[in-house]
Image (tube, rainbow, N blue to C red; front, side, top):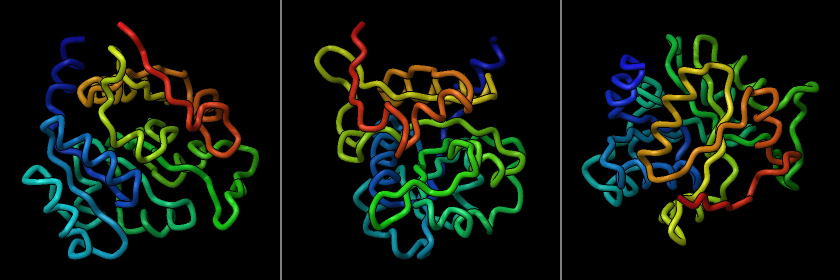
Length: 210
């Protein structure tokens, strides 16, 4: 338990692959918590210069490989571009990846073809060697970017995964960002509940009171 606590305390640098609305909302919460963040997208670091300036000295722009080398990596890429976005990462080497994606095909908010699985089970196969935790995909970007302290409580973030230690680390990060984590269990069970479209939890905005 002491080793796990020490590992949690060692988390200082977060990477984000995908700098759309969700990625930017996550970055704002990360820098507010005093952590460093590396943002990346398909257009390259120069395209993120203005956003990084807004976020301040704890933020920097990098390549996808730069972001993927962080202590914890957030994945917030649109579903159509997910495979190409990850193609440049040679190995995950046991790093924790937080899957904040949703299997939405545009236009029309159609559910992607998942072969009878939920989206996080599909994403797991795209990330050999990674320890995947599903989280931060159910809140709208504007809600995610706002103050997680509300009405005397904390805004809820759901998480699920098959690696107990990885979930504990992400749960610690959720707390550090000011949210309240609720563990939904395995990717098979929790991932299905969290998935948009199809699951019952997306866009549900709950506050956990003390």
